[in-house]
Length: 280
Length: 285
Image (tube, rainbow over the protein chains, first blue to last red):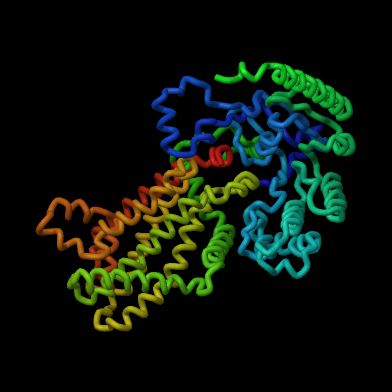
């Protein structure tokens, strides 16, 4: 289970990520009713026969070779974030298997895990402990994290005194301090003000250059064509198309336009229905 | 261990681990023991957080039990004319461990649900969260022992070498608290009712364990009730604490040992249940 294990040399081309028939299911009974009464009521009503499960992604099979950079695009609710969470090891597969060769980056992007009462410096140590980085390596990394976050004297003040931008900068700085073999990116490019955004984009580009494989989830389609050499279009948890980024982005835009038209038609149909018929 | 294959070299994430119970418990114990640095940081953070917004900070662990003792003393000794010798000391050796238990159990129960965003962003063994919460409470308790020293100052004739057994009794309580806390932390993730019922259940438990009046007074009038209540873990713990600090004699070693055994079994069951539930945390939070 050591995330730092080296990849096997020799065999060509070595896959960085292998996903085989992956499925992740959410149990709606548990997510919706968070009290005992709710679930008891559910049991009494015997709605166990009803399907209370939701497959966020299912029957997903693809692999990613070293040197590849994969974009995952798709509408909201397509399962993009679920897939990324599974790749990061945060969600376990309900079905199928994920194999990752090498260190996978974390999704800790905006400092959601910060302890507000601790100083920025302590939070850097805490994050290191959470990520399983040993003390020595963390001590080596700390100065560059502090420098990149650019929050000056505040680094020794409790994080609760930070502005939103400062928190985001520190979070981003920690998350990108370690160069992973497999880089997972989830819309991290819109962090902070203009100057920091430019610097963070430069940092991401640097990581992209160093990483052995990249999986990117984004709505910024220009970024897809700039950085990725492959793309997957995901809809309702299934792969709709896979291939050249340019072609996939085009396909996605077309489908988005179609769906928008359909939605507008629906809206018009509803608008024509006389209000009296809507009363119960 | 197993012969090296491509799969052991890579990080494989097979579908939900259905390992055998022993394996799962062993992994759980490894989770706790293998992440001592993380646990230490979390304990530090917890201590800073709980005392951040008060002027007296950690001192409240001394002041609060003393105030509680004063309230009960006023109520029972002065208003209800309950006659128990050296009543403040009698009360205090129950109030202080109880404060440790109740605050720790509350914090531990919330230790998973209170860190939703973290659990959805980083992969780490969640068992460190209840463990850190219990240990943070323990640090506070040790600090709170200063208050016991203060109370003793007025009842010096009750002091005996038996008081040195106090850490042993506290160790039994620690195992018991860790077991219960780990269990509740996992259950509360699925049913938030646990945190709501907790404060009421705890208050009842406190009274039924003979914290304010000795359970022995029931022995002659209600023998059955007495035997049932004596089985309760906190009746055993309170008796033990009182023997060494107030009664100047050895605690009931047999009862303590039995409670330790039960606590260890509970802890193993709790770790097993927690590990079974762990993969679901990120999905339902």
